[in-house]
Amino acid sequence: MFIFDFFIKAGPIVMIPVIITIIGLVFRLPLTKAFKSGLIIGIGFAGINLVIGLLTSNLGPAAKAMVKNFGIKLDVLDVGWGSIAAVTWSSPIIPILIGTIFVANIILLILKATNTLDVDIWNYHHMAIVGVMTYFVTENILVSILAAASMAIITFKLSDWSQPLVSKYFGIPGVSLPTVSAMSSLIIAVPLNWLIDKIPGVNKINLDMKNAKKYLGFFGEPMIMGLLLGCAIGALAKYDLTRIFQVGVNMAAVMVLIPKMVALFMEGLMPISEAAKKLTSKKFKGRKFFIGLDAAVVVGNPEVITTALILIPLTILLAIVLPGNRLLPFADLAVIPFRVALVVALTNGNLFKNIIIGLGTMSAILLAGTATSPVLTALAKTVGINVAGGGLISSFASTSLTASFLVFKVFTSNLWITLPVFIVIFAVVWIYMDVIRPKKTHQSGDEVSL
Amino acid sequence: MKRILVACGNGIATSTVVATKIREAASERNLPVTVNQCKLMEVESMASDYDLVVTSGQFGGTVTVPVVTAISLLTGIGEDETIEEIMNFVKQ
Image 1 (tube, rainbow over the protein chains, first blue to last red):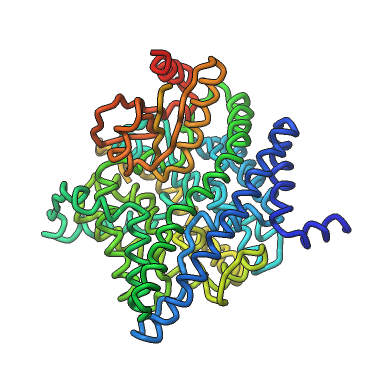
Image 2: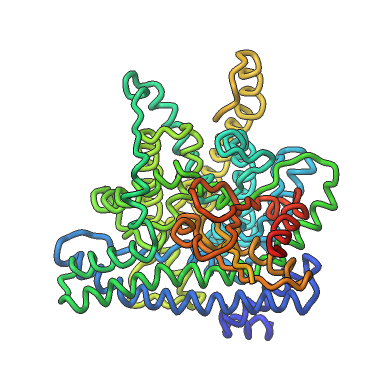
């Protein structure tokens, strides 16, 4: 008990190195290597905390002034997925949740219920955060483990089902993408795509904007995006000219610095990911499966970049006009390509559909991000994240993502009602995708597509 | 000394894996290299300062330097061949 108290008091900066060392040892890394991994991730956390301080102390007051001056009520700051990943990795229960996700994958593989081998430990944070937030709300470790396991199962199944898209559209065979930030969009995109295809006339529309990259590429660079947004918000706050530019340059700094800090997390986790890969590939030797990779491998596709560049300004406009939204898009505008990558594959690169569906998925992200920001902010504060001025924070990741939001809601509401509903819906989709659809497509000879 | 630019979607995750493996392979062979990381969107504006571009996934742009696709360093399938391809280039 004394040791436990000590670590709680010491905070994540001391706890992270210890936790990651333990996870490393579980995956049979040598002690020195495991400890170094832990320390690097601890350093990444310290760095991210500094940058969040810079972000919230600059943007927070400006956003509040903007609300007062113009009634544009965007007072929930988007601190970016990397900051949320830092919160996730510094939770005391993270080793349990990482273990849960890893074991869930192994069990599903053994049962042949999935073909996705996901040892991309780095992206486990997207699934684990739902467990961390569920634990924060319910204080029930069992419910939180179930939430993380549900996220894992949904992610592996969505990866299986979308694998033909990845293979066909992006030309990467044998690979699936269990990255929640990319996969989650399909929950809204698939029905929307189906609907658009049913509307006569509309289903024939396509746009051609090959030049979008030429004109918008410059603004898509994070530092330029940060500068322009910072200046714009400074102006809306009715700051004087020097202060407008100060906010602008500081925000450009945030956009460039957050990824650099997050890269330390990746560096620290890589030896663990590699060890997990070795461990599992030995276990499943000879079995054919899809290797789960970070969706980063497909966001370089030119159609994905074009769609994202058009959606970045549209998302800012959307945030202003969308009723109920309070999330001010900022740090995660840089990762919109991940949110649309699979939408682009789904529509086979139809830009008109990509923009319409993209706006649909972004609306869901903004509203869920607004709705869950109080819980996220309170959680971030408990791990010592420096949120200046008592404002709210959120992102385009964690429970802003549609899949994560739904699972979080299921496990934090009345379980006796939500859990059966969730299980029935998921089971119906599973049976349709794995039993009914393969038969249908086989009979009609259609190509398999989502 | 050869300069290598490693690019991926966000310049963080998969490019770190690829860059680390290139650095390790080069130091095992006692070959000096400089490896830097960036986002795929930045490749076209940065590539001219490098001798080789390595991407972790699909790359649709055009650059004047050779480009190696290194998805095998992530999946582990054909990893040794890709490392050899990059090391042969470094030796030149």
